[in-house]
Amino acid sequence: MTPEEIAAAITYANQIDPRVQLTDANLEVWSVGLSTIKAQNVRWAINQHYANGNANGEGVHVVNPASIRRKITEAQNTHDRKQRALEPPLNKAFKVGDYRKRNPELYDELFQQGREQYYEDLKRRGIPATPPWETNQATLNEGGFSDGGKQ
Image (cartoon, rainbow, N blue to C red; front, side, top):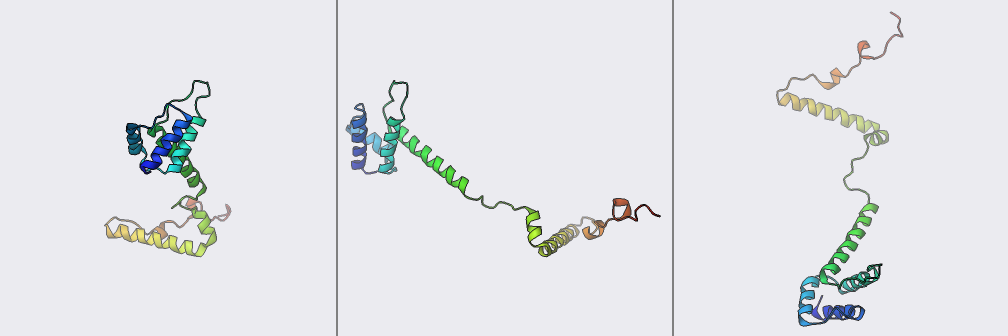
């Protein structure tokens, strides 16, 4: 904000609350505290400060740059949270079952390729292992197909 906009904001606050005075010291403090904030946001924060004051009739404290920044930051954070809630999450892992249903041939091919790469990596590092495609064969003892109890 420019010094003229800050002086206008202080004057606006003074019209609501006469305890806010337009002095050189007050102008300097507000300039330091509100130099990066837009004038329309400052006016909104002043309105919110006095409109949503204490409901018990005791009045509100005098508006200052810190309370204005806090109100603007809280409003911006609330807006950002709402926007993030509406957007789909980024880099979210999808369910494997969904991919398998959509493209079973490619899924099986990629799955076998990953198994082979893992086995080759184990061999390269010198770790003894049997190929996974040999160990995953079901036998009668492991609950594979049976002859229905006939021997």
